[in-house]
Image 1 (spheres, one colour):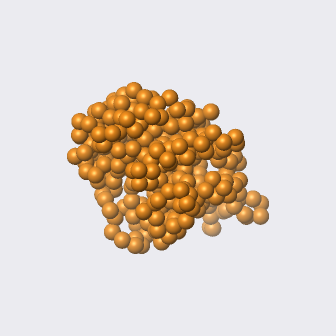
Image 2 (spheres, rainbow, N blue to C red; image 1 turned 135 degrees about the vertical axis):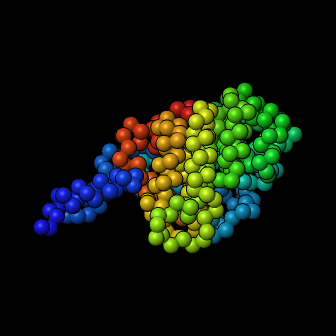
Image 3 (cartoon, one colour; image 1 turned 180 degrees about the vertical axis):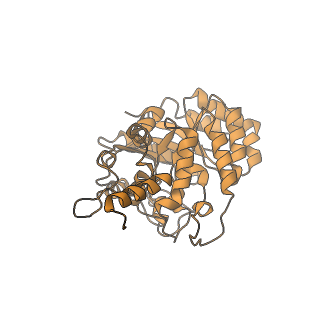
Length: 330
């Protein structure tokens, strides 16, 4: 006897939940309605907003489709209808001699009435001898919330000057964004241990490579860049530390030219959410860098699909509440 429609839909729904996904709701006419009424209305804080004006700043890393200016007006157009209520600017790798100019630019932007950009994470190099003098000029700023810096090697994360400067950030009430490769996550965990009073943010799900998590039968454009098992272990190790949170972001741009689906990214997203818990994860758009993979609204829709089966309170925390609390946004 043929399976009736109700039983079929029940089994399909159960299979979707098992993979960490939720099927989109449909109207009586069969058209998708998104991932649920309450989820579609969630207020969003974007904790990783890039902006740049090439008339003001020199960016040597740009390539298509990013080789043009991306302004606040462009961001408002990209987020129209998405209910993005606040954003935190993220530094854009300007040359070191333009870092102060970049910071002053974004402070002015935050001060503009009605600006969706409410705070900023600026560039800085904790390995530099002049770091204390540089960051000291922003002491007490209500808009500068932290610093993002990179390390030339895992060894540099053990440098005494670096550790000393990370303690300085704690004294100033600032945070540090960790943007490291998946191969450096274990060293990053040891680094976080050396600065227990400093608040850290792990960028981009630890830069996980979606190819490493492609489901069986999925054709990959290249070999995976790391072991999925080692990534899971290292993320769990970081998630066990109380002074670090995780940005759910970045992964959509890791495989340019390959359309990514929710089932490709769900293993990464779900493991980060479970490892860090509902109170230490924040949404991040990574616009316009996300355009290497998909438009911002597609990334938000995809993430909503993956988390739709989680409690509504946890989704509010992910998309809004945790960021407001962590960055002290008003």
